[in-house]
Length: 53
Image (tube, rainbow, N blue to C red; front, side):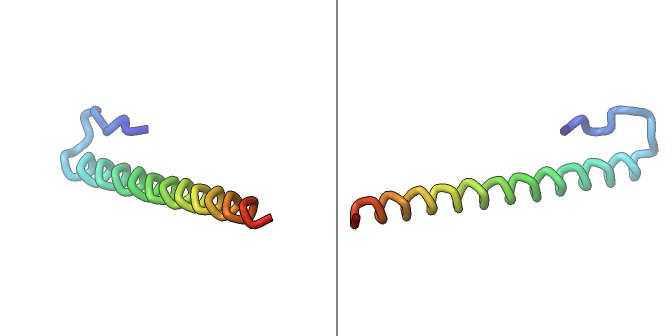
């Protein structure tokens, strides 16, 4: 995924491609972190619910 344009394109195009890939990677990372966080919260809530029952 982070195969950052190692070909003979012009430098500016390469730079843009790298920034775009890093940005995309960052967005995906952020979404994953949010998913994991919500799952952890759900697990904690379920545990609390079980304790009350």
